[in-house]
Amino acid sequence: MNTALGTIAFLFYLASAARLGMLILASEDAPRQQAKIQAFTMGAIALIANGILLNSIIFVSGGLDLGFSNAWGLICWVIALVVLLVAIRKPVENFLIIFFPLAAFGLLLVLFFPSHRILAETAAMGLKIHILLSIVAYSLLTVAACQALLLAFQEYQLSNKHPMMIMHILPPMQIMEDFLIRIIAVGFFMLSLSLATGFMFIHDIFAQHLIHKTTLSMMSWLVFAVLLWGRWYLGWRGQKIIRWTIGGFCILVLAFFGSKLVLEIILMRV
Image (cartoon, rainbow, N blue to C red; front, top):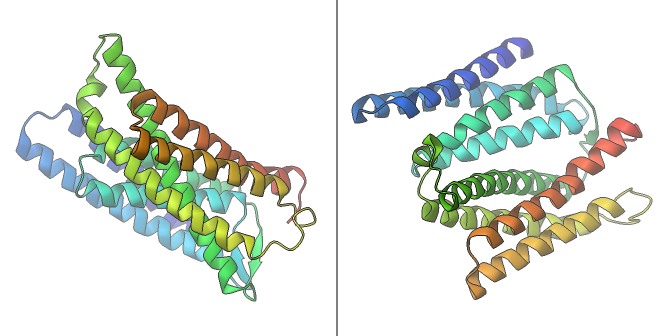
């Protein structure tokens, strides 16, 4: 069953991304709208199949299995879902050309490179909420980081006066930057809630192997806090926004996946 669901999700992710890629070359409005609906439909099928698969793999007897590969696969799925939902109302569907293959990669990681870390059913509800908030925060800030990279590329092309096709594919820079700030603001809010709920379950930060994760997460939170303050009160734009976004995201990746990779894959601790 899992193999069938995985195959369906993988193929439809790639088919949707390919359809969106073909959509870039379309010039007439009617075929573009029809192709967009087709791509979104295939993407929705992939997300549903992937979601059912993740549900069967993560929700196991005895608790939640949130090992490294499962956590990465879940975050990729949330990212693709968020971007697809946003693309229904905003002109950001071309981002799915990146995020659908990313979700397909996460799916392969779940199926062929499993790692296990069981959160017992008896775990406090607050801890489960903390994990959910963390996944949503990481997913949103991943979208923000990818968008910041695209925005940096747009600025580079404009400053060097070498426009490429991608400049016509992406939304205008003003829309890109405004959307970036909104995503960061929501992701920062979720990260704040995640940290607040997480502190409730820290009893011995060293014995629980949480010192690096907690310190790096707080550093990332501070970076995004300064970024939003600079944007709203100092009017930061362009390169400042891009550098702070990428810097905060890199720290966050080290906090979450760096810690999980070392503990679960290298040190084999659960």
